[in-house]
Image (cartoon, rainbow, N blue to C red):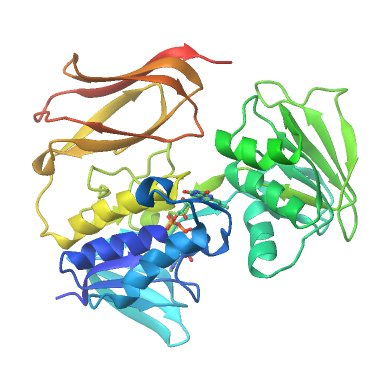
Length: 414
Ligand SMILES: Cc1cc2nc3c(=O)[nH]c(=O)nc-3n(C[C@H](O)[C@H](O)[C@H](O)COP(=O)(O)OP(=O)(O)OC[C@H]3O[C@@H](n4cnc5c(N)ncnc54)[C@H](O)[C@@H]3O)c2cc1C
């Protein structure tokens, strides 16, 4: 018999919600978290905008997390191990987790595993910036940690590369703390972050957004002295003659998040190249029976409310008894990605929740769902943008051997 019915790896919003849902259903649950506090990335998100969908309130990330932390601490069915890092997992008829902490190396067994270990930031070295290696080049999450948790201003004259949400939020934060943000440079022709963040973080503070431009080179020994920016074409190739030198002491890189899946890969769990997270069914169970994936390690979410929702789905399922699955593939066209990618025909609810992002900006868009070529569900959208994830409930009850296809169409916006 395993030590726990469910072990949750990661104590961010996904892990907290999954653990609560599993324990509410009677599962003996353990959360393993490598940091010294629960809350994940939300510990450093002091801006508001969290929980609008779930609580109908604009909370800070810390406030949102605290609502779950309080419940976890009060729940008799949940144990928490902090400062404990999962380094290995082996599978037999149960899962054996090896973790390291100040207590040394320990092994813990679980009937079900819930991966809730988040994502990591892509770094400057991963986007081909040439030049020296001065201090003052950092990711937006690191800058956020300096400012919000350590009370340290990382620089005075900042350039931000990438228009993802974290970069936009840091543009505003650094400005409020007295730094000068000279501009946000985005290689794509459209911004990567939510429209609300473009307006509230850049427009409201007169911070210029330069589209189709990137940072090509950094200069400086010891400390960053300047960056060279230049225009790029649709293929992300530099356009000669457009180079410009911008003196600055800080380059904040916000060029994408990568779901953290080394542990899942060590169990040979197949990953979807579109999401970089595992393929899952509607219960968020991966292709490995008894292993679930939720939150940002499943796919990068822009809103934490949906992180909590998917995590609860997985938590409830992990508390149930194991049953064989009949999985059906879902075909998709026109999406950046669609989750879940599989349907477990043996546990279908009247409506299945799907999350998706369009592959490109579209106006007058239509989502059609077909079973064996016949449209069973259709929904219209005024406009769709890749940075804004959509949630849709679809009534689906296909049979084994049928073909389910999700198709997104609409006018492409350049
Ligand atoms: C800067 C920023 C601004 C955001 N702004 C908003 C906003 O305004 N509104 C909104 O709704 N959403 C926002 N989001 C999105 C939202 O915060 C995230 O989608 C959400 O926090 C993801 O939760 P998670 O639990 O999946 O991951 P995380 O919060 O990253 O938690 C993962 C946890 O797993 C732990 N872990 C990882 N590996 C291991 C291991 N091997 N062993 C033990 N523990 C491990 C980590 O320490 C971490 O605590 C923002 C995100 C960021 C980064």
